[in-house]
Image (cartoon, rainbow over all chains, first blue to last red; front, side, top):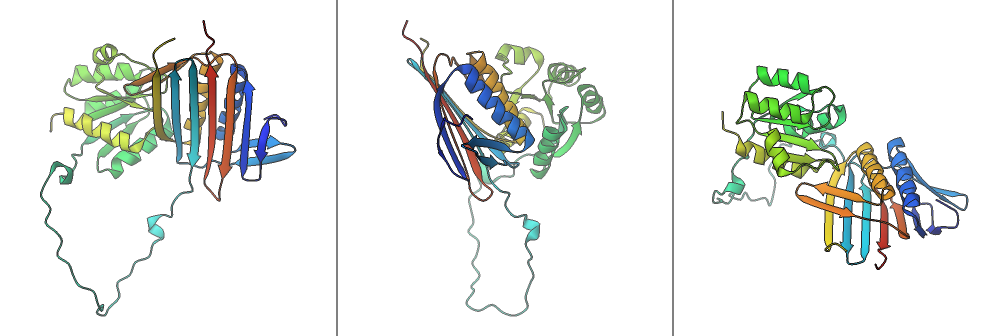
Length: 242
Length: 77
């Protein structure tokens, strides 16, 4: 950031506003992106530097509007320190009778779809990048699904032929065998198996292209875990119980 | 001028994924045409001319936010 552009600065706070060309704004965003990759984003002014070290668990918020003659884009990147791990909690039983504690009978709740157990299944996750693959596998396993990961389309298809999967989740961009190739092959082998495509920002597929490729649902990166589980629930609802 | 459009998205990302998202937005701004898609939602915006850019960043002990706002006005034809 240029020295003259900062309107307020402190050791923990930075504010900046100016008129800029699209190229200058792009340069600024690129610079922040590089900082995020390095693990430290710096804003400098008047010889002072404010450094930010975003940790894992970043929340990205995007808002874009085009109204009449005016356009706006807002990108917010927020992060929070990780909560303490529950394993740090020590719980022990104590002998003796507690005073003043009455047991309460648990209320009997009417059964409803919301209180019924969510269906779990066997999920094959095909993703060339290790980090998102690991995150997906961990999330799905934590939700009770049986999961198997594969680092390439060809390997994933080999695993699909050998196993019995309720849903296949595949990345779009992979070398040798793309997500579209995987979806087509899966539908050829097992037309009833739902295929979820992991897409990046900017990957646009029309409903016709999705249908022709055998893709049932799309999951867009960056992942929102609630959305991951909801898409998987939708995919399992499409699949036939084995 | 096209019809009014609005788009909102919120997602969890690693620092690397957040960086990639920002880099793609930068590419779109440099190209003066940026398409954002999430599920069924889609918007294409055309940032051009003089852009008003505002950056706010703050942190507490281990939490923080970086807020980047860009606004523009299309010239009357």
